[in-house]
Image (cartoon, rainbow, N blue to C red; front, side, top):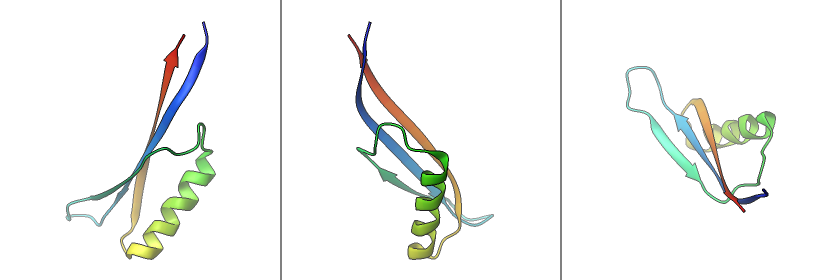
Length: 65
């Protein structure tokens, strides 16, 4: 069996305590982003939006052949 990478989606969550969180979704990311890359990009987005970065979820889809 062979795994073929299809796509990776990263969901970044931003917000303050007591406020409704804001989510930014990035689709078609690289196959296996490193934790440091995701954290750094979340920090860049926080700087651009002015909203604190809370967390990120990385989902990778593969096709098994």
